Length: 243
Figure 1: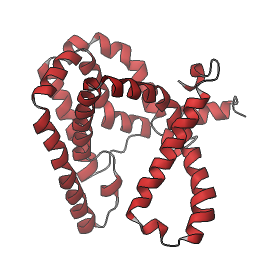
Figure 2: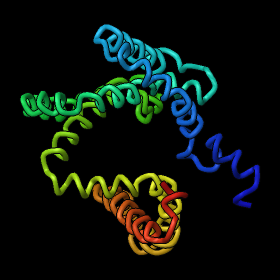
Figure 3: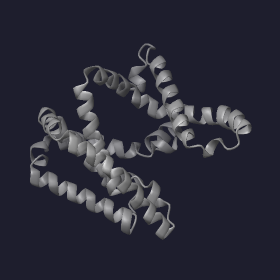
């Protein structure tokens, strides 16, 4: 029933699979993007841009530390995620200038990135231990995680722009990534059910407690997903459907 109204409703409302929760919010952003681009001369003024940053940080801080924002899911996610889209739009108009600035300050930016890791780890650990609420650990709206993501994006942008070959490879992977996002859950479930649970855990009961297991499992699923996506993308006209 892939073309049924129930399937389309589940897909558009993010009910088809747990990782699709953002689809309704993405549709909202896509609807408003043309209007936001027309407002770009206003948005990229530093006072307006700074105000948007303050609003975003305030919303995330309230949601993470005080009380979860209770709007319905598409609106809640949009309120807590609008800034990356705006940053992306502004950055797309100033890529050369941004690259020069990053090149000048790359070393301190990189050091700041690595400094954030222990800060985030111990901050979350203190919150979870003191409150016994694991939501502090896995919430993606942690303001420090948000900052880490922005800094990491800056570092990767510089590295990929500097290395032309890597840039081409990343561009190729990015063309596959949209389909991989939909595909990887099936691959993950398949590998877990037919390899990890059915074979490996029976032979090695303590497998899951090894530090390298999560890394290996992630790498296996990611590599398999990209390989399958690359093969499927070779089919005629499939890119129209898969992105």
